Length: 80
Picture 1 (cartoon, rainbow, N blue to C red):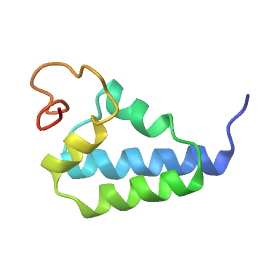
Picture 2 (cartoon, one colour; picture 1 turned 180 degrees about the vertical axis):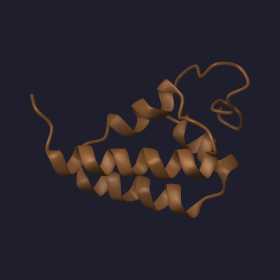
Picture 3 (cartoon, rainbow, N blue to C red; picture 1 turned 30 degrees about the horizontal axis):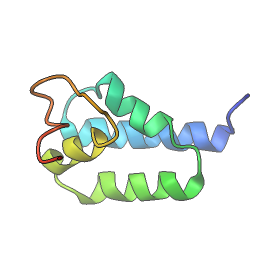
Picture 4 (cartoon, rainbow, N blue to C red; picture 1 turned 90 degrees about the horizontal axis):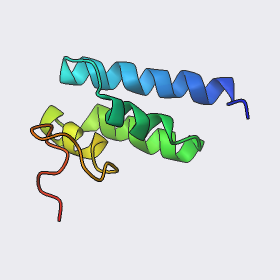
């Protein structure tokens, strides 16, 4: 199934903003967190979070859907 161009453009904008805030490329599991959301409401919430939270919390947020992020990535820290 082909994705809506608006969704693809918004996902890329979120990735661009997240990479700028983190000052590094996103890891695969962080990109997947964004790419797996296709509803406009979900993308709005993700984009708002990317813009509003500090880099350390952003790393935790982007890793929150990952069951086993690589060690040292911060994705599992603080989650139980």
